[in-house]
Image 1 (cartoon, rainbow, N blue to C red):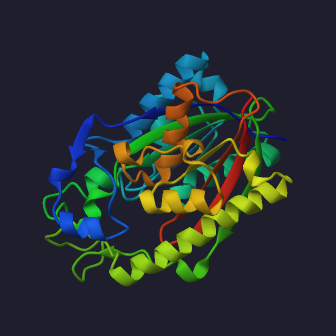
Image 2 (cartoon, rainbow, N blue to C red; image 1 turned 90 degrees about the vertical axis):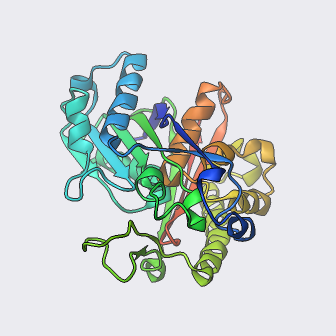
Length: 329
């Protein structure tokens, strides 16, 4: 049984934040991890991921002439900084769209490749639980919620995250099939991305917002891992279907910075015009990057029948990596 992508809708915050909002411009110029973007979007203090995702879902359902109660069996979500610490927003989305989904999962791992991971999870349930239709919801909220604060915006890393939201509708047919998925987990790297809260745990009372612990040595290690693992996973997913790299029409990845984007396409000899990204406009969208870019270029009518789209990336400090192939029909 196949899983097909029927449509994707992206929704971006209206607040555009330019580089002059942030400090340490000289450090950003010289640090390969934190440079290269001109603007990004930030979610507001009182805005909720569930509102953005339910609005995108309703737009999608209206466009496809679908009924939330009868045409959605499953909702899966990944939100980088959740609306609430204990509960995910899947059930809230179900409520806000007037849905009746039986299976709801709020997944907090796999970060920048969460769209691929969630799609494969839905596929598993289609094979074993008779799921027919699902919404895959991915939200990046760390830009406004962490790096837009007064005590964090001076950090070099603060300029890189941007917020964004995307919802995909998938079904259990051959209409626009995902051909293959490949994932790897690297347990040795699972503790290398940690919060920095001036010696406090993230849940303890403190007088600072906190940030991510990305020192120079960690940045160098992450760059080396990311440069190696993403091309490896793309080659692996292509080999699983006996497809040559030069058969890929378009490549969509997570977009940590311009260096990663360039290194990945050059490692695979993919021309720049076949790599689809929005880094200069939206910055690092974390897990939302792949579905936001997919929706953005769908709206431009870029994809033609028969096109092969490869989506790939790595998460956090490279604890997960993955790739998938989608045949456009």
